[in-house]
Image (cartoon, rainbow, N blue to C red; front, top):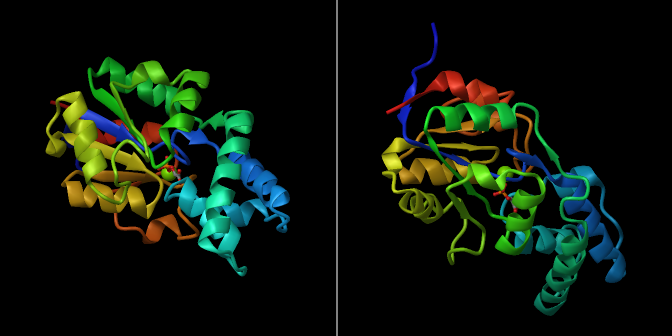
Length: 225
Ligand SMILES: O=C(O)COP(=O)(O)O
Ligand SMILES: [Mg+2]
């Protein structure tokens, strides 16, 4: 028996861990920042578990996990990270398998597409340009576009407003509980990819409408209305 199809006019995509494998660049910028501040480097797997709630949260965790840092030190660390990430952003980033086929197929179905990420806009826009993904999206909502980030549903509603589509006609595709909770609160279905970053949480323990080992699996779950 095949799973129910969602009647949609728009699909909202998460960025880090869903469209793009950005972990090496995030880890490189984190470790250059830790070097600069005289702190020990951290393994990639640990940094992986810190990604999902935006750069300030990633940097705070790099500075305070099993360590002490004042708010002023964390602020300095965020500024340092941003400087280093500006230089390495996109350097080792890869588009995940199946993404281009999925985006092309959705475009051919006349679906409106948006990217909704917790990554700050200064890093999101150059990355979408460098990877050639920008032309697919009618709207991009970044981690600092509004005063709130995912899991707050306001960012998903904002993306739908920009696309001119009602939230109940949108589907979210993400990789973490931040995406799933935001989608639930916004009243839209959500599919999670199993290859992304889910803050150290097994992705199959996150409540959602289905898991995708490759984004192309979403095509069998939707019909354009
Ligand atoms: O910047 C992050 O921490 C995560 O970004 P994402 O929302 O695109 O996964
Ligand atoms: Mg993500």
